[in-house]
Image (tube, rainbow, N blue to C red):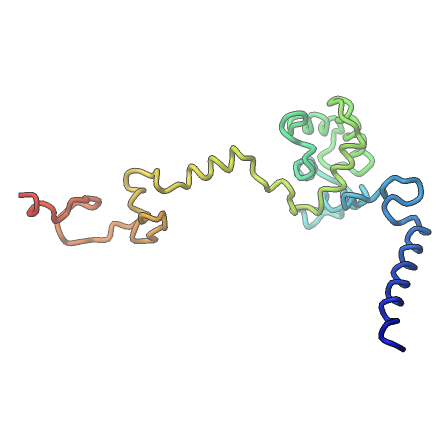
Length: 203
């Protein structure tokens, strides 16, 4: 086999693979020009329901979900955004089911009820719930700019006053235990007194 023919073979194979994909209709945009249904890494609703109904409850068989698990799920999926839908809304609608744990059919009724009362599309809620990933792999870790600014402000050691100021050096690096414990110095000065040994110089 001559050296020149190798790349051609590879190209030919890739072309064949592309054709196969199109025949099966699995390629995005195949068949009727719309993207495949499974975009956004969506998982079947019942699988997501099962995952979240076991979240934080090792004894759960994944068939029933509690309000707190549902709230975790909805927060992770950003269905509960604190504006349009809040945990109060979910609690009110969940309590209508008169059960502390509900199966997937009742849960769908709960979602339907919630969607109608909040004028949100049920499909939209379900899409968010099936694309938010596994429990605990939280996608809403990104803090709001306001929260980030507050954290920066509170952790800016240059603005610290009083005894807290003495826990850090000029660069803002913590001094560890030396900054927190009043290490005994036998000089007779009160701890925290900063003008030690200056008396003789000024007189």
